[in-house]
Length: 236
Image (cartoon, rainbow, N blue to C red; front, side, top):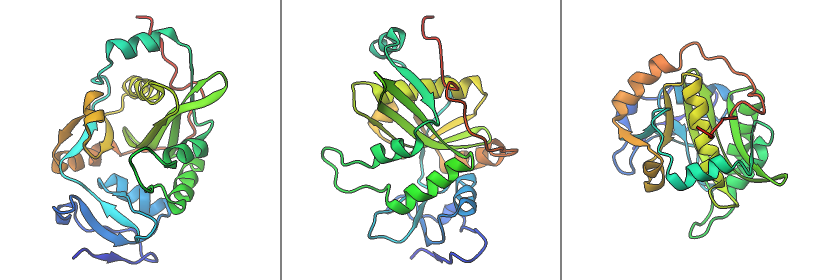
């Protein structure tokens, strides 16, 4: 059994070490998707993830998939695409559109965890300067991107999408370089996937990750990112 959290209480979660092994990381249900609840969750290595028919579910898997900025893996073909520069990278100019694109149906998948309550919650966090999007534009069209949360020196990736080849990888590469430049310690990728591993993400223990967060999320200040914040020179 997992505890059921009351939405009217001060945000408080059980220890992540009480999370279930099956399903991996399920910690609690209930609570709220208010900014205070979500920010508290991230600072403790917890995130919300649920389907439309479920209550709010909170997770903290072990191990955790993370990327250390500066250790991303850029393939030769992707680097060639980045050098061509036939795209524009923007930040925080179409956050809601990026979320909608990430929530759109995908081949081989049914439903989405980016339900309306999640969309409303993260758009509010974007308005407050905590949630950000990195967007790939081509010929004036949004063709790929990602969104996530920036708290202190930790960036928590949530989802990405593409409508043209490599458009999400382009956004990811620019985000990774931005995070390295701005001295971020970690890019949290949450769940392990082969795709993320191919980009340089690795698994770390939950205890190591949570211990790091106590340092990385200190002195966090929200703020909207400039549209050109993730611009980078790939000619070298």
